[in-house]
Amino acid sequence: MRQFASSGFRLWNLPVTAKVLYSTFCLLTLAGVVSSALYYQALVGVGTAGVGHYYAGETARHEAAAHVAAEAGTGRAQNDGAVAAGPSIELPAEAADEAAEPQEPLVVPVSYRKLLEVTHFHLFTMPVVFLIVGHLFLATALQERTKLTWMSLGGAAVVLHIATPWLVRYVGAGLSWLHALSGMLLLVSMTVLTVYPAVMMWKTPGRRREEPAADGVG
Image (tube, rainbow, N blue to C red; front, side):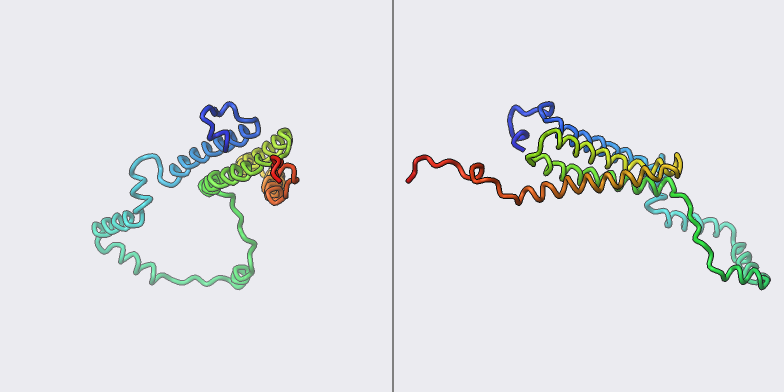
């Protein structure tokens, strides 16, 4: 923070650890903006007509259905009566038993819109958390090389964990191990970036660092 407050401060004067932290945050934020545009397109569409359908979709559909029903007259009511008065179908005993037996749940792949929704949410939460704990970690007394290692590992884990669901969905389920690996890396790196600063801030420094030397008072 002292560097930011300095009148001559420039971003290129930051240490490498801070550059890694801020660059990762900027790239993930940019990806979040892109995901917002893609998510909007998936929900609303490209043209302006999709805006009315999305925000007032049910009203617009009911109005269109009422208009069609008014032009068709009583045709719909007659069709509904014919369906209601239709014959009932009795299932054979074997088919009824099969229908009564519990079936295994049908698992379908995650849709593009659902995956985009999850990614959009994580792109605007995980980078912020990484930025905050990264700032705390930079304020510790560790060596710059150690800080750089953990900062790089944490940033890579965040990026990989957000990206791997797309790889598993569209490249192949055989990459599931990659998602599990990114989760473990994320757990370890975020634990270190969070716990270590929390412990160090409560650790009392030595008296020589804490108390200035006396100036002959006595």
